[in-house]
Image 1 (spheres, one colour):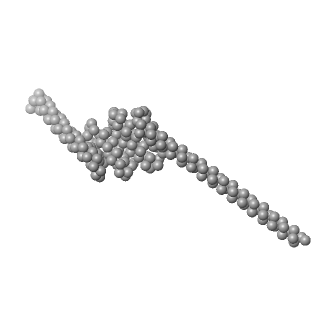
Image 2 (cartoon, rainbow, N blue to C red; image 1 turned 180 degrees about the horizontal axis):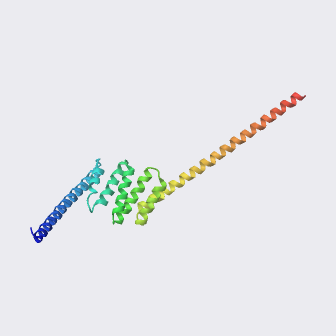
Image 3 (spheres, helix red, strand yellow; image 1 turned 135 degrees about the vertical axis):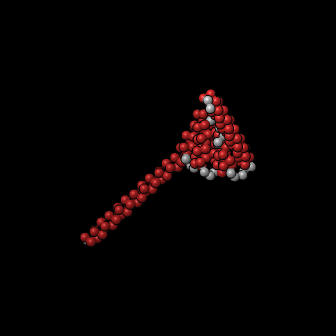
Length: 195
């Protein structure tokens, strides 16, 4: 085979390989898209397993951020696997150019942290949502709620600390009175013995 024919043969093989790879990628994207659609239907119907379908949908080249976000939402909705839900939201944040999706992913990251009573983490995530989309009213509202809850906890802790301090002082005063009474009783006994 001449060099020219070998070149043509290799070129034809390369083109055939690219076509097969392209067809395979399109097939994978079609399957991923179908998984996302099935996941949405299951999520809307309240059926379980939507998160697994969204996980399969993350392999879609263009829809991976949306699939990751939807996976996180379905896990958050069921309130199980909150760490995994946050990881899904973070994948959506890292791979999307859509600011609305990014802000919603931060918002739901914060909501998952609130469910675990991580107020500091939740407030930071709500702030991240607001940095991405300053008009995200739900994030603004929930941030205010989290701040009030943190203030209430701080007030409650301060009140408890104050009560503990007062209890210690009362206990010390009682001990001092008892000590004085004991000294007085000893003195009285000593005086009676001396008489």
